Image 1 (tube, rainbow, N blue to C red):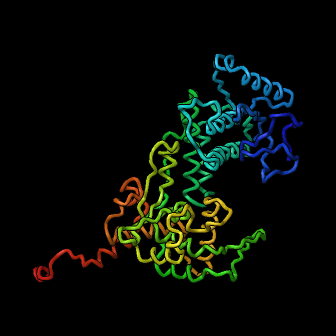
Image 2: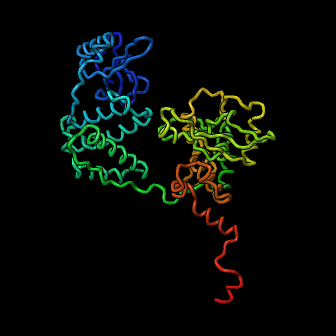
Image 3: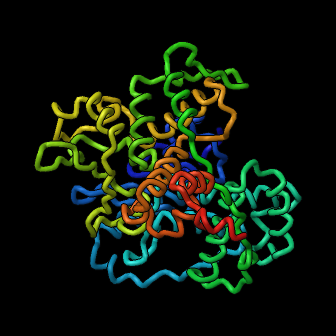
Length: 431
């Protein structure tokens, strides 16, 4: 892998802006990064007063990068001069390539005023920039030189052709919609934040309906999958020959906790023994869950109390907690699922999601259900049996629950089960 010229110099590093990895250690592919040289930047990382100061350098030549790093170091050692330095002119590069790099920096809050900064995950930044780069790849495939072609040349007709082709090739509507959202955000950044005089080619672009008819995991299918969770024949072999062991010792309890709690995958496996709440009689009252999606969107700076979702008691949940020996661990800051596993909850969630698909196929289930559909099953059961799903706070609004989570066929069966009829029996004789 070709990288920018590098010689060891205190504070100087090379970072891949595609995956945020330092790559100057080796000319070979490093830590899984195999992105081309045009994704790389020199970066200054300096220690000061026990802290760490960083800056992405503009230079693409080694000597110029050293000079820029020393200027940055001088600025840090002269705080008065640093503060009083006149603001830099807001540059407006015109090539698509440079605009994408500028957008990537903005997403990472590089040179963004503190009160305008927004916390974003590395995964979100990586995916968003990746979707925008797909447009760049499409243009290059069709003969455009994106390092020279200006952002003003990419008009509505070109973008329209790109999305026509993308829609035909996309395996899912969700992927198509992700591309729409990313490019909408890219053009909004250029026009609103940077003041480019552009016509947004995606201003009226509409998202495709992803799930007009939500599906759930029916009881029998869930039992089949649970009974199929064994270490035998747990190796999944991909077409390229790669093998993955889909069994984990905590997999059964993890699937059950997701099913009995109604929380999202990462939220469910992040529940701890200290989240179990008992009533005055010492029995399980409810379990506290955290709405991580709400937290990321509305409480990223942790300035407000966390949004708690009280997970209601059920006999199935109590049985699971008993098997997890909750009485001997009550109050401990310890995960219910895989407490001793050296793995992040996000990575564990992905692992479990893949395993669910593997064991679903192993159980001979043809329905395209995934681990996330257990949440739809739970919320549908709560609604049909109690009518209180909105009040529990699993979603921000009732419309989200109605449109994306409640399985309408199950609602219809519940209505029938409650003895619904339009007319009294005696009235039928009058018709």
